[in-house]
Length: 226
Image 1 (tube, rainbow, N blue to C red):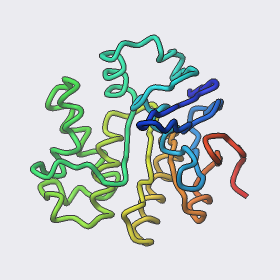
Image 2: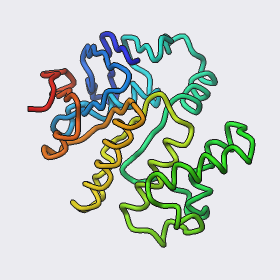
Image 3: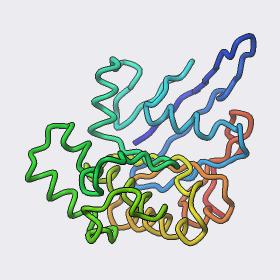
């Protein structure tokens, strides 16, 4: 499903060179729920952004679903992300002018999915995550946990091959965080959804099938949770 070989990412910040990743290699199988963990500055989000085609490695290669993505043009990368990948971020990234329903079907509409189909898909996923009674609400009428569930619905509506989540609970209280993680676990188990999630919270570990821990841009462990 995901193979990364010798990934490095170097940023030039004025006269300072930052080695965010240093020769990372890994494989993630279909249906795994993988946590990427480590201290701040360890390279967690950098790795997620490379695997999710939101950034490009300085060196190394990434194979997603059998495709070596370094051979894709920028346009092809965009289409690949839109059709085959889903994303959930810590800031929800909802469009404030749109309703819950509109936020969820927006990417399907951009893809050119017929209206009848994207409406049905949106209603189905919103019903699955318990927000079917919030279709016409806007983001300022929802709690933080509800907004994040809308973001998850938007990411899942096209049934992505891989769902990437970058600190999705960072702005949530403990109860809302548990609800979001329970939902991720449910999606993973019931839909065999591959999920790669960045986290720094120790108590999140029990939700993952496997934990990849980074330090200073390198993998220091790759194990199931203890």
